Image (cartoon, rainbow, N blue to C red):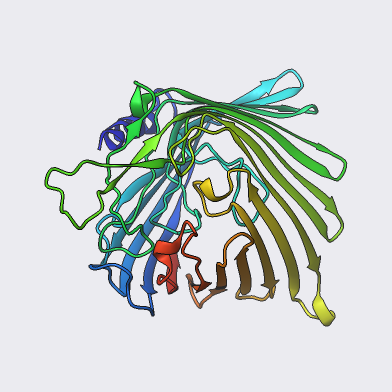
Length: 411
């Protein structure tokens, strides 16, 4: 892969900076044994009911005498059921320098990194810098590393981030043997609106500040969309009874975003909103649109005199494209309960219910996290599709309810 060669060259260059001697370093990470079981019969031929795998995610942080830092985090997965889910990625590989400028502080990162923007729980509209590693989780919980030059300026006036993004990462999709996939195969190649293709230079910026109980951010992005729409491919030997495979197509867009969180004691109010121009809808037609997330959260501390904290959350996700939206959160309500036991084992339990207000679709999620003896920890997760409307974007995954277990060794 061309990106892999570029990343390797970057790592070698950054790992041996001239005239810099390491003063401190830290090597850590995790190795995870993972398994997923799908109790329902697969919707499409070739899909398996069980998948097991091994994940390794080592990290290395080095800091020189002059305060120059180097960070490296790689990711490798083996999967028994889906060859496309077995993959490797460089999540982070960047050099960081920083300093003071008058009464302000500056920080510059060069390399591969991950950036997070947003305040919502289920889906972050404004979070557009990194591509999602969709084979890792259907709800966009993992990101691919993004090559970038990232400058941050901060002071009493707030913080400003300026990013130049020279390379586009294609979204990952499950293969023929994998679950949680479309009924029509998605090819690994991609089409681009820009003649520069994946090497189009994108730009992003964000200003953030805090005024009393309000934290807010204003963001802008111009470049290649991270979310594709799909066009039919032309197979060499088409079968009369088979639909052609799909090719992801990435257009040039402009996005303006707002994220805000209001903290009033145990209450949190959350807002994310975007305006996106140049994107195409499910029908392949260009349509400017807006989307918004409104949410609230309340935390009960030390319930009934115990050490348990309970948080209740509700969010509404809306997309002005309606049924032509290219994501699943066009008019949905998400409610969740999170329990933190604050014990020695750091036990946490989360329950969530996602409902579509336009279609008859409901999904229930359950998650348990707990430390085990030694350096081990356990994560158990289940997502159950209670009902899936045939008009829903995720109808093809209607039989892909699953139960997953992760045994993690942290070092």
